[in-house]
Length: 292
Image 1 (cartoon, rainbow, N blue to C red):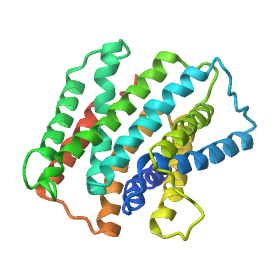
Image 2: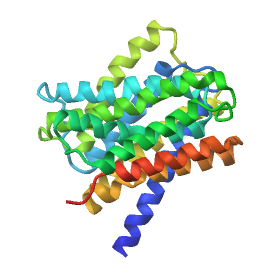
Image 3: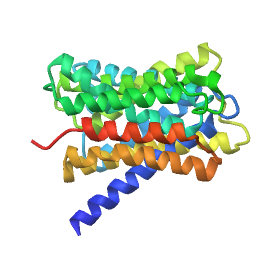
Image 4: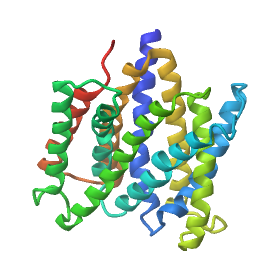
């Protein structure tokens, strides 16, 4: 029964996280800009993470000692990657975004090698090369994108998983500092909100919530809620089943993201995209953490 619950949670978590990408596509469909979307997503993120901490009886732990961690996670894990992913989402199919997000462990591994957190392994190097080949397929053949001139946005989107890979290694470098994952999420979301509000106002990207709501407006809180829900489930599953088992969600996020985009957004993909997806998932399989 425990094993069934673990696998059920893994599948559901992949579904929830995978749905974020097509929902983001809807949010940017009418011209909403990254920092405007971020503001309201961070407001929801602060409220949900704070509520989760209070239910668990945990302190919010927003102290000066932990501020460097919160700033690093806010920039590397929220503000900067969201800017690149939201910008790319306005120009690329959501399924392509779902495939590219699988680059996270492929970027994380070589960074960890350079920082001395991992030992060299030929299979993991092959995995990184497989991911690189997938990226080339997405920007190379004319048939891979609906509009070949959009290849620059594929490269732009690739910056987001690079930043996520940097974030993971940054957290390893900084250490736990007495924080659990949800406390880190709460503090980083507050800092991200502090960054996002002046940027949204200064760049004219502010979104007025006092207006009639249509699909793009509903997509903003929906995406934030799904993202926080998946993250909380991820933390819970790590404690229950371990990081190696939980890391397999990477395959499901990509698969669900592509499937949901096809069903609800009517997206179709060329053979090059499917080949790129296969190579990307192979790369993730080769570089993911191994049991020790």
